[in-house]
Image (cartoon, rainbow, N blue to C red; front, side, top):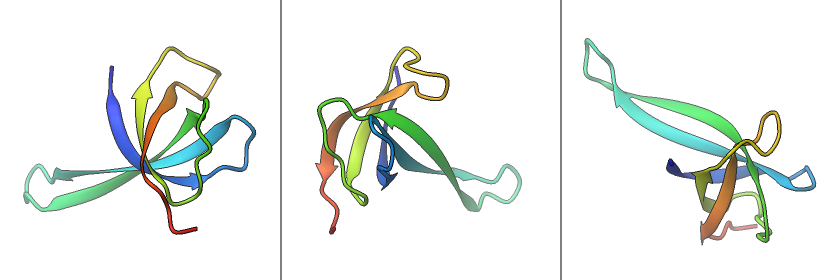
Length: 80
Protein backbone atom coordinates (compact mmCIF):
# COMPACT_ATOMS: atom_id res chain seq x y z
CA UNK A 1 0.00 0.00 0.00
CA UNK A 2 1.73 3.15 -1.23
CA UNK A 3 1.34 6.54 0.44
CA UNK A 4 2.32 9.51 -1.73
CA UNK A 5 2.20 13.30 -1.38
CA UNK A 6 1.42 15.65 -4.24
CA UNK A 7 -0.26 18.87 -5.34
CA UNK A 8 -3.81 19.13 -6.69
CA UNK A 9 -3.72 20.55 -10.23
CA UNK A 10 -7.34 20.00 -11.36
CA UNK A 11 -10.76 19.48 -9.75
CA UNK A 12 -12.92 19.77 -12.88
CA UNK A 13 -14.50 16.31 -12.56
CA UNK A 14 -17.31 15.41 -10.13
CA UNK A 15 -15.68 12.88 -7.79
CA UNK A 16 -12.13 13.02 -9.14
CA UNK A 17 -9.13 15.29 -8.72
CA UNK A 18 -5.82 15.21 -10.57
CA UNK A 19 -2.71 15.22 -8.37
CA UNK A 20 0.80 15.95 -9.62
CA UNK A 21 3.40 13.76 -7.89
CA UNK A 22 7.08 14.69 -8.22
CA UNK A 23 9.92 12.33 -7.43
CA UNK A 24 13.67 12.78 -7.72
CA UNK A 25 16.05 9.98 -8.55
CA UNK A 26 19.74 10.01 -9.45
CA UNK A 27 20.87 9.40 -13.02
CA UNK A 28 22.42 5.92 -13.24
CA UNK A 29 25.70 7.10 -14.73
CA UNK A 30 26.10 10.78 -13.85
CA UNK A 31 24.41 10.78 -10.39
CA UNK A 32 22.64 14.09 -11.10
CA UNK A 33 19.17 14.27 -9.56
CA UNK A 34 16.44 14.07 -12.19
CA UNK A 35 12.95 15.33 -11.45
CA UNK A 36 10.09 13.21 -12.79
CA UNK A 37 6.44 14.28 -12.65
CA UNK A 38 3.38 12.06 -12.87
CA UNK A 39 -0.30 13.03 -12.95
CA UNK A 40 -2.52 10.68 -10.96
CA UNK A 41 -6.32 10.69 -10.89
CA UNK A 42 -7.61 10.30 -7.34
CA UNK A 43 -10.99 9.81 -5.68
CA UNK A 44 -12.06 12.83 -3.61
CA UNK A 45 -14.28 11.05 -1.06
CA UNK A 46 -15.52 13.47 1.64
CA UNK A 47 -12.80 16.07 0.96
CA UNK A 48 -13.24 19.25 -1.09
CA UNK A 49 -9.76 19.93 -2.46
CA UNK A 50 -8.81 23.19 -4.16
CA UNK A 51 -6.17 23.66 -6.84
CA UNK A 52 -2.83 24.12 -5.07
CA UNK A 53 -3.60 21.95 -2.03
CA UNK A 54 -0.89 19.55 -0.88
CA UNK A 55 -2.55 16.20 -0.25
CA UNK A 56 -1.59 12.73 0.93
CA UNK A 57 -2.98 9.94 -1.25
CA UNK A 58 -3.08 6.19 -0.74
CA UNK A 59 -3.32 3.31 -3.18
CA UNK A 60 -6.61 1.37 -3.18
CA UNK A 61 -8.33 -1.26 -5.25
CA UNK A 62 -9.37 0.04 -8.70
CA UNK A 63 -12.26 2.51 -8.40
CA UNK A 64 -12.59 3.00 -12.17
CA UNK A 65 -10.53 2.35 -15.29
CA UNK A 66 -8.03 5.12 -14.45
CA UNK A 67 -8.56 5.71 -10.70
CA UNK A 68 -6.79 3.63 -8.08
CA UNK A 69 -5.82 6.21 -5.45
CA UNK A 70 -7.87 8.17 -2.92
CA UNK A 71 -7.19 11.24 -0.78
CA UNK A 72 -6.40 10.48 2.86
CA UNK A 73 -5.77 14.03 4.14
CA UNK A 74 -5.18 17.59 3.05
CA UNK A 75 -1.76 18.55 4.42
CA UNK A 76 -1.60 22.20 3.36
CA UNK A 77 -4.28 24.37 1.80
CA UNK A 78 -3.52 26.23 -1.43
CA UNK A 79 -3.42 29.97 -1.83
CA UNK A 80 -6.62 30.16 -3.88
